[in-house]
Image (tube, rainbow, N blue to C red; front, side):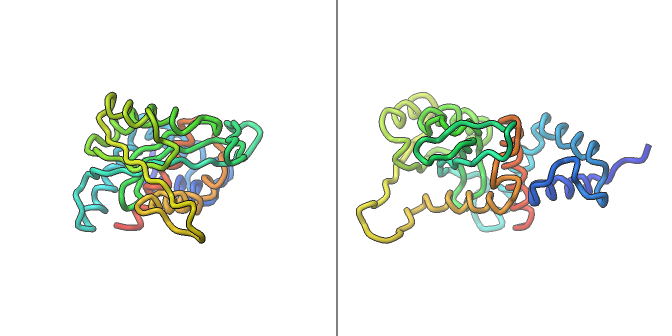
Length: 228
């Protein structure tokens, strides 16, 4: 049996992430969708996407004259509307969004370090504990984390005691007129904009949290490959 071209497999996966098409709707230029999906599930289960993301992020950081592993992370969340009746959903009462919430930590370049997906009605402070566990597994070099006011209070002390991370809460100058980007924290907002360039991510079409997280990682891998 002829071995499939893995480059075509990757191109098919990136095509799906970028265009938002269904697996069964992949163009005939690519291998059969069943084969593409098989490799997607295989690589996801083996954590290959996590490993590739780490390697590419380190490569781009070194290319920019930075250390391979980041020491500072920036944490925030993004509420995303649901894309179909079967997809995961809850209601973010604050932003009036029915769908999911992506909790992410990025480095100073905006490159993804860790991601965790919940339904939209999970508060940032509750999800932060689970996100810290993901961060411990993904990148042990991070020591300090910048966050907004939604993460203040006892959470800061509890995370310091349990995980050793120092969370620095950056509050916006809401009394000042006009738009003023918050120092450092605007970087994670740019990351969310990068995600939304991919139609698979501008709404949530995934049926599981794991799949929703894998799509975010794949979008970041595609971004990093373009920066090498």
